[in-house]
Length: 71
Ligand SMILES: [Zn+2]
Figure 1 (cartoon, rainbow, N blue to C red):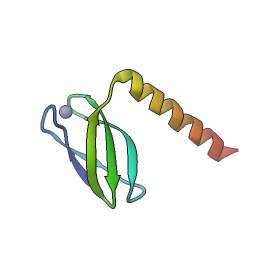
Figure 2 (cartoon, protein in one colour):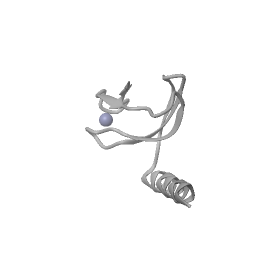
Figure 3 (spheres, rainbow, N blue to C red):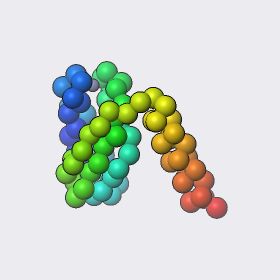
Figure 4 (cartoon, rainbow, N blue to C red):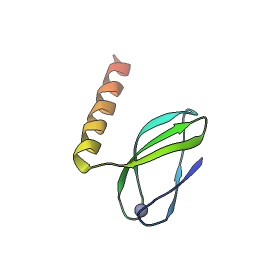
């Protein structure tokens, strides 16, 4: 479990990792702001603001990946 501090509202959020590295969308549970986060070896390396449009695009990519895994 990794703690991620939202730069907008300064709220700590818990982010559970399946793998030590992750790059993708993160949503603050409190202010619902969207970010792209990059985690390497359980350490937060970068956190960038993400637009709703980009977020949806990333969600679509994730959904597609899940589909490919099933078949
Ligand atoms: Zn927030």
